[in-house]
Length: 288
Image (cartoon, rainbow, N blue to C red; front, side, top):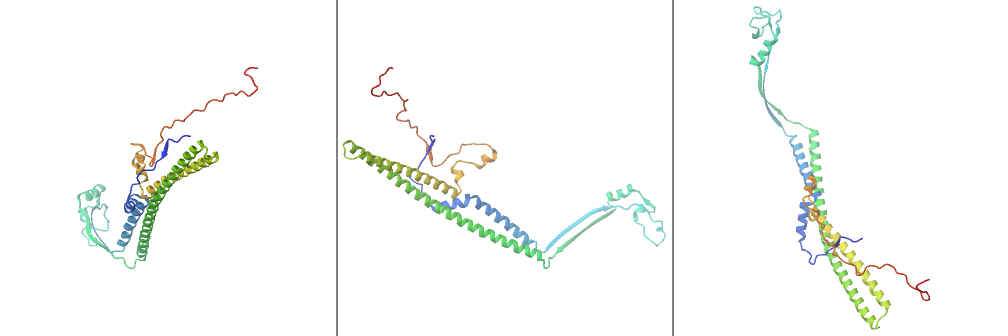
């Protein structure tokens, strides 16, 4: 298996002030945005509960039409004093349904009025308890937000420290590899003139192999710390070239970019393995 890319350590580490990194984290961390939305929602709920305990004054007006119909009571006459028939009858003893509808349309007997409604809550225990609970929940949300902000600040500081520490480890591992390679080359030259032994060469090769393994581990730790810093600041998707809008639309406008890696250079092997050939043992001839 041949990897298509290799880990890359930049020659110069970009120096970003810690406060700028913290500001980026405060703007882009999804959990902080979520807590701000939750806090705003609780603030609106708190004000709504508080307003429900205030007196309310409502003004209203209405206008409608009514109609009277049917048969007049036989005991109620226009000449007697027992009752007063409605004026709509006009001396008649009954009004049809059509006449009743006509009264509603032409406003013969309108129903209208205006008024005010004042509601003063007195010792509303339920509203008071709701207000106290809303205030406590709002304060708890504020405390959670402050705790999360402090946690994010600590994560950003630790991530930046890990980046610096792992970069130093990469430089130290690279220096150890260079020294081991130089030592191996020098001992190989000594071996040619008989000033050292094959055992020393094997030890130098083992030291070089160990150093190269440590260098790979140091580069991997450095890359992980860089990714952790991007996660802590909330810029991981942005640096990787991943657009949430593309995911929402289901359309990719540009390919993602894997940070801190470089394409693997084409390396051709020095020699191709040859097919095994039959060897002639001493005392054997080429033919039977």
